[in-house]
Length: 339
Image: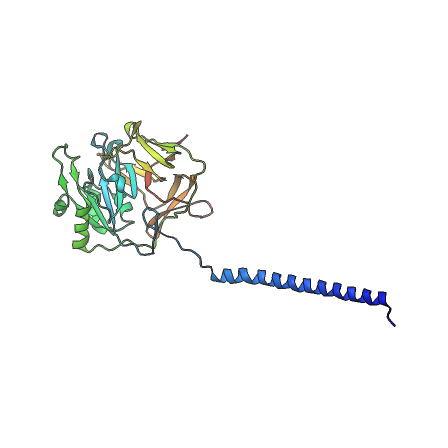
């Protein structure tokens, strides 16, 4: 017969075991639900897709890009500045023309509203090669013999001020010729309506990323003398400021030119005639250097699906940030001077 003490011992043991089993059950229940909840959450999470503007990398609402690109040749002679409307270009290309003077190509979103753009100057084949990457409309005043003979072979609609395209331009009689030809966004919209220009192809763009400023460097592109370009990073503005010939590069607005990305392309080049016109190999690839608030990147450029792209040694695409981009084209790496 179980005595009183033994009975108490058995009751305590049973209660103790029950408490342990209950604790294990609660633990397993909680653990089970901890595993299930994240799984349910994960099943409901959808990967966020960020759509970006083809030209400047800013975020947009959807994949469709309802505009056409407009490429315009800009005068950059020392005595032809300041330029009008260039500050509104999403991408600016700069390369040597004759006499070691640089010329500019601005690429615009056709939805921009700009009353005066220029001075507009003549075409060169290598600028046409870059303009053709965006299609749309290409506007200029005449061009070299090679440029004029090849214009019909490009993907853009060609508008030359000399000839039938004259109605899309005007001359400012307060300025000296040939630095006095201008156009406007209303003129390129007329072209778009009359010629039914197609919207830009949204499938090919650069590798734009979100970024926080890191270690940046100042640098120069030594075209020569008054055309030497200096890019200096401004920490307060989180962008690069442009100088040329030792002076601030100023737009007609009075604002200094700035850029969020500067791409330096090394492109094989040579003089091809007695007027010092140049030929550039824009399709064969070469070195590239990129400067933005992420710091300096380097690698190689190549043309992929009709667009110049930039890759490191492991074939990872180099990174750009949203904003305006300047593309500096040089024939030799020695022209790039990094401080």
